[in-house]
Length: 263
Length: 333
Image (cartoon, rainbow over all chains, first blue to last red; front, side):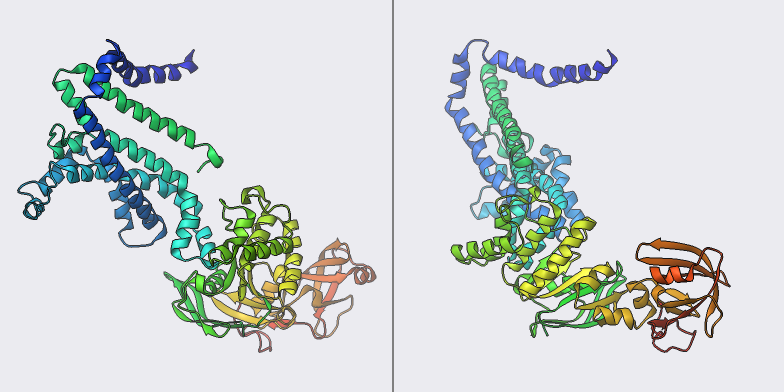
């Protein structure tokens, strides 16, 4: 019996923490049939919230993908001073609470902030608008691509790149033809994780968005708002939709993995 | 001259990898850069390829100063010890790489790659991935890849170092034949003196970042300019403060002028040759190599007393401060 104990503990833990609550959400959503759930999802403000989440993700993911790859190359391939510092800074968003990130942006771009006043005078609105929400999301989802790519770059070494150079390839050709194909699976994982993180971001965006219904309300903020308006079914329906996307992301990641023998 | 390096100097922190190295490589030759690990031979090769920058000095390829050119503009082919195969490309794509990045016409690439695949005997493997090849096949693919853009010089960094002994021997003689066929100026790095002697027209022997001696293998073997060269290219005995090769010692059973008395410790029959292990009066070991016939004629066994002296015309190097020779005053390795 003893050897089953760890397995039992793990399963009970997962059921208690993860599966249980999720099951309750599903059950509560469809408690009164599909109707209420559907009407909550087809509400214009909910649709707008999802659109906003998608727009933010569509900006944050490509930006962080490019930055992540460049950053990984800088950390692994170049011997620049302050490389250790750069490496540590990439991890900062993992350690820092998103609320702190939001607050920092608030102080910087707020009405009396360092940059806020100047931008306001030039007619650019950052806080309580899309720019700050995108910035907050980029910040919290920044480490994932770099974190996936760095170990793979280290593992493959730079001999293939050197070989490409001696064969006549310039830096750009070497990157597209040799480096990128070698790290492509790491980039794919990084992109998937970045997407998941961006879709689910709450804390930082909550601080900087101002939560203006139909304007700066993302899907996660919408869940909170519905719940506080005592529209529990609506809150659950949106949660289910978000959870479905998360599951989809995980399934994609698992499906993508075994192809071409890893990497 | 195909490759000329002048007064090259390279440091890694406090470590002096190359110290004022000047070397000329003839057009169409096959030259070995030989030396122990840490002697700077790989660094020299990588500087010629442009993969490393020298702190001082110049590199000329076909008369043009390429010291500041990046590797892709030097017209060199480079073969790495661990193949550096492009893992996500087939054999054909690997070999074609240098032509593809130069945007050569498709039919030209196909023709040239087909010819190279035949040359390196990888027919029928064109569509395989490197992971599906043996080490020897991968290295031949890497060689074909390096030859594809028709480089002015071919540089090989310990090309057989990662292969097992049998494949290494095969590839060695195969490379020699290939060189006779293709005739591109070739420079290869090795720490194996037998490999250098067997393959190269010329050997450049490096020690601690300095060139010890450059010349044909026979010249280095027979007229070593320093104790280091003598020791690196073969076994050597210390005799009278000088160095003498085991096969350059004469054995007699009677005392003779200039002969040293020694006792036979062991007689080892190695087929066509016989090795005698001797101990001289001061307890120093000596090794002598005899033909089988000589050994049978002397009929020696452990405990016998013999008299040893260098043969006439034997290659020898005298240690600094001892003996009368002048050639040996270059320091000991």
